[in-house]
Image (cartoon, rainbow, N blue to C red):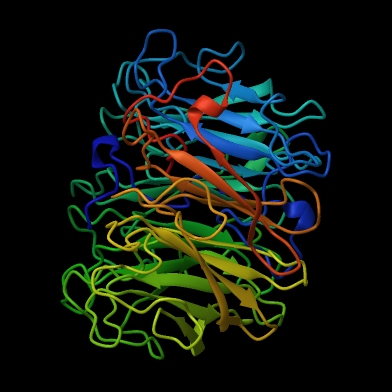
Length: 530
């Protein structure tokens, strides 16, 4: 498992940097998740921006964490109308504690079936029944006034019906979570990663918990635990395999109006090759996610380019799902970060596999990398193109899904690992390499300047129509970005969509100090979330 960004935070990218899905704008058979359609918590037609501040001090507790919500408006995310949520907020379950990291991961969806988006916020080091670092999450429901504590609930291993028991340092929910309607009832369910979970005595084998939603949102009723010991899942269970690490996604890949669950396992051993990596796909059904009928995609899958490689970590990145070829089935974009491109070792590439009535297939696979004609720059060794960050939305308003690919290890001039984002635009057949764009901190019109190890777009890509103009906008985190006064404060850059695609016109740069009364602390990593 590749060393994590900001390892002091025990951060892993997954679905992520927080994930969002807006069911009101997602067509059946083309469901997309993974920061694709932004949440609208108050139902006003503007998507709202969620920014994690997981290291923020709360009531004297360092690293307790909090989450900011900037409501959308005609001018974009509104700081004056902001909401701030922590476990000190009246009505939010739990209480702040040192290094609890509330906001370490989050996901949005419509959990109770009304017209407002809701949010689930992880506190992976939460104390549960005296077990330190057991981990849990809080669900807040949307309303005409935005997020509210009415109906707020805490969920963890000791919630009735949730499989397992709260355990010290399990950090349930640390690696991310995703919303998806796995049973097709019109309410989004939750899938929660727990890569530090022991399975059948194997340490840190990893597991995923699926919580179904009812009228009050997700609960332990009908909850399911999925790991390599589950019936029908490719195995065997092994120590330190971290099932669910680096990525989880949900979307309808077979057109049955129920989402599939996609789980990355970059340390998967395949055909005797250690840590070759793979991506699991679990079908949805009327009763929710099924393990029988699940498949795993690896470099050994027919049609997937490349050969199995020891420590190849295939799939290590946040998947994205959208109907790029407009056939009514969601397609799956996954990352092959260690692919050799034109002799450049570990240059990386993104693979797009088509959906079909039988699910995802590698037949007709599309490949995106920096040696493709029309893609800016060239493939270079150790860049891991696409590592950790994919997102999809319609940036140019043409009715076709587009794709944003983070490249956090991109060097900008002499600045090492400054990071960049690439956008690829849908043409009705796939996303086209010939019309791709590249944005980084030294691009014309971009604010700030490149930062060594800034890792722009590493872990952190959100999308949403924050100004309501009909074009999806792109928000990029830079957890390692500095200011003149402090290092690693973290920033969020918002690029607007337009008829021509993503543009720097009207670009905004947000730091913690952009919010009245807040300061930029060193090593805050503002915006960073799994």
